Length: 95
Image (tube, rainbow, N blue to C red; front, side, top):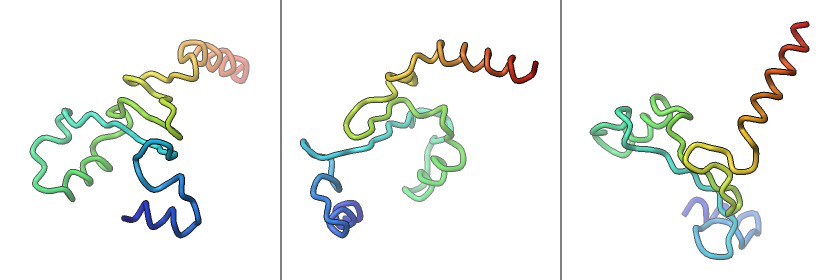
């Protein structure tokens, strides 16, 4: 309801629901991690996600319907090439 009504409030009919033809951002989190063992209720699950889960548990991400992270690896950027470039830039800065 919050997403549908929020989209309606700003006049966007392409947001607010997970349906064909709508813009969607989704995150798939690995709930098989020990951080999520036997949560007592939904509030505890959410608390564990925020405080114990961390980014390492994000497996897949879709932005506007396009998968940008697949099984923990970026789909639009070559992670190894970016890491190499980062190391080179860091070395230049350090002198």
